Image 1 (cartoon, rainbow, N blue to C red):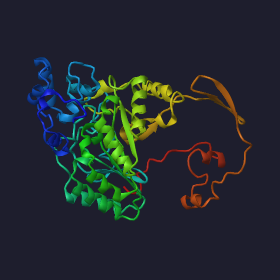
Image 2: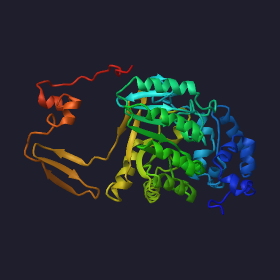
Image 3: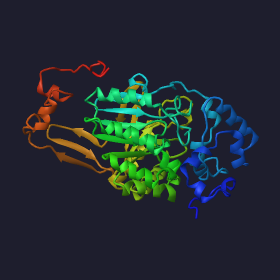
Image 4: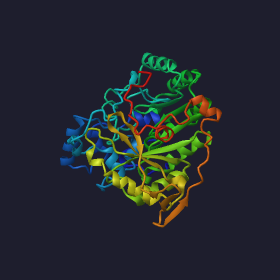
Length: 415
């Protein structure tokens, strides 16, 4: 039996077809005509607006995800993420084509090296669904193709040449739109590099095409531990029985699953909605990892909220529910500045011997600082390997007579 109720347009589809992830991809809704066949309730006026948007940004919705849409509710959180609206044609001041400047930090086609020990490896421009809030919409869906073996080879060679890289984030598009064989080829090449310790996959498949998480896929992924998966649920309505089953299948294989939500106006910018989402995620054995502030990509300004809204949501979670359920709220800074975590102000004041703290209830307490003692820093073997001691960051100002530290704008050594 089907677990998720399907819209009428798909009621004649067999179980075998419906649960075939490739069938879901082949039968994505990509045109206004097909969208109106599935949802006859869409008016001529809305259809005209959608067609106008499709001249600029593509649409693709899996039949499964379409079945989660309440088409008669203009505020349906699934509808807002899936069906284009005319607001996407408005470019707000500050909108950018590549707000995170991933292209600037590329060391090979599709390979971005921004942080010292990890790289972002894009392997395809294809997604199961083209989310209306996509930060990488300049690339995703433009050609609907996976990267060639030659492009992947160039990426692998660039990684091999940089021994400081220990962590790979494989993304796209959605890397799980690749077949098992193609994906395994990439994983096998990465695992052959001695200095690669961690491999992560970023995928929205559990939310929009959960049938992709097959037993065959999971059996293959298990061979490449330590391997982590970060998925992308934005609303608790997306955590259907099929989605939960997909996440649990990954967990049962020993693959830790984290979730990266994007804070979206009208979708999840509410403490109550976000609390229910993180609770449902934990029940599915998915760890809430990040809440992203919506990026400055072109055509998505109607989704953006004030940063204060994100801080308010974190304050409504911290202390009011399990710490396991509290993700880190981050702004991925424009111009390639990287992720900056944002928290409510819990430290009210500091002196040499006390820190004044505010808890989640508003209670104010004093924490007495310990008597200054010599730190282990500089004595432990790990410190000697890193040559850290007090030479980096604010610790330098405590250890030296300098009054200021000037930031260095040098490119990373790998550039």
